[in-house]
Image (cartoon, rainbow, N blue to C red; front, side):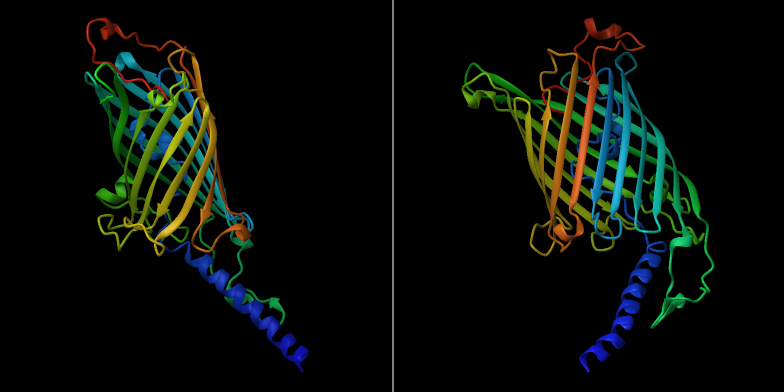
Length: 382
């Protein structure tokens, strides 16, 4: 009797499971999409804020790779590459970026390529960076690999034809973003003779700018005028040298950072938009980097809102003033608090940044000898 009941319920169980997967997968092409959120958000600075373009001297390349929930139907993969160039004589930074993602069994693919320009306003002990970004984007979907509920038979599975009319398999649209960053030096008095300087920054960026100002581009496969909502990000951080605490010649740096982003058609309303708050710190001893970050779906931390905790381990060349090349390599893993844990494949992220400082800029910095208002370097860690 038990085996008969099991055999009769098993096909219905699979039908219900497949139907739910199909429904939620199909609805994802109608609902508002959200942008990818990087765990090591400051490692890929152009993705965080276009105003960061060209903050390092010379040529800098950055690459990011993210894999999450690999065991859940292929999971989600994201990769990005950025090349930046600073022209101090023109107080300008230029960046080229390319990024793409792949998710699900269909699969749903995204591709973007763009240019970023940032203008740097130098002051005596601070800089204001203002950036504008343009990108060409493409979404792709293989409709032939989708199964809809009207194709399913309770016993034999997908044997019927579907009445669903497939939409476009490719969507192309243009996008804009802008941002501003204030970078400044502060002084810390250690004793009567020693004064330590530390570098801080505060920034604000807006992604999908046209959706905030008016009607954004149609990013729907069904041409249903579904635009990607604007994403507003507030972020900040500082670099505090702790060499004086070590009692040795080792270079010790503490770097706390935070990020608050909101994405939706009512970004000012936390309840009506997707909100993510991240905060944590890097701890650098010579070339060894470690870090821990907390991610929450609300400003107020708590078990109900906790999304994940990120742990970072990496290496960096912090002797920027003595060497003509610098790098950062960081690997992170997210410990998810929403139920998607080890069984789903977890979340891993790898970031690599390499800076060649010795390349001479096209423009010559003629005003350097007559004024102290220069472009701040990225000493220590960033």
